[in-house]
Image (cartoon, rainbow over all chains, first blue to last red):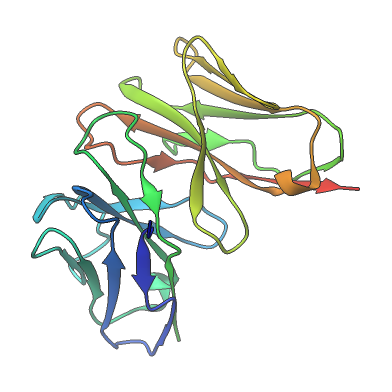
Length: 116
Length: 111
């Protein structure tokens, strides 16, 4: 079956531009996570959705970052007024059941954002 | 101090070598432990979970020491295809299962 998909795969933005990154999780997966991976680092947690509810946004770096999942399936991560430090790979992951330890998260291929 | 720390690497080893990666975590409430593999410009993929009793999957052996807050991964008989970055990952109770990653250790296996 289809895995997690993300679009666009690559995005180049000018500093100050707004961007929107899309994630299509595996069908039926309740949990959805966004992570940010800077060059040479491991992914860092941004935010978590259980269905349409955003239960944890503690990892969002600033109020320029906003995420939504209005119908409990597709999610969008929006970054307003992009800065150079926002350049990173943004990874989306989904898992079947909410919050249980050991429940495997499946990652999408990521969106590589470059802010000039 | 980062929550999950790993050997910085890179590790350059010949085919057939045995290589060990170490990882320490700072949160004693950590609940689940994993090793993920990430190929260059690809997404992370689960390699194996790590249990206190230790577990083995073919050439890969993972160990967990909760008292020392230490996790290890041993790869025996390295193959060229093992070349990748290995990420040590933990979750903690009450954290909605969000993954806390180490920075990763890069492994390069050469002929």
